[in-house]
Length: 107
Image 1: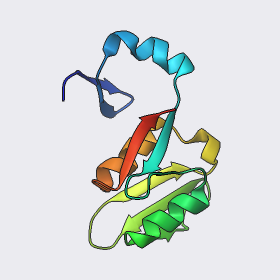
Image 2: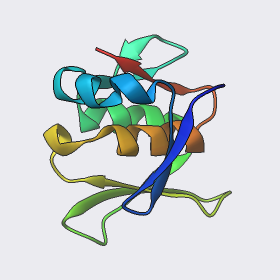
Image 3: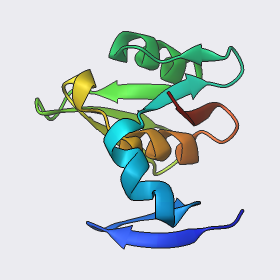
Image 4: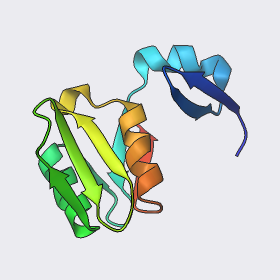
C-alpha cells in the first residue's frame, strides 16, 4: 500500500494518488460492493440485509442516522439517513469494520 495519509475533518484516510485526488473527486464516484457476492450496494435495505448476515444489529435511537452495532465488538456504524448522502468515508468505515466482506470501488 503506497500513498499519502490525509487527516481531514477528524478522519484519516489513505490517498493512493494525491495528484489525481482533486480531479477524481469532481467526476469520480465510489460504490460499496459486497465482496463475496460482487453485489453493488444500491440501497440501505440491501446494506442492512448484508450487515445483518454478519451479525450487525440496527439501532433506532437517533432519527437522523442509521446506526448498526455488533454485539461482539465496540464498533458502531453511523450513516446518514438518506442513502444518496452516503460518502466514501462512510463506505470505508463499513469496509474497515468488516474485513474482506466489503470493498469500495470507483464507478
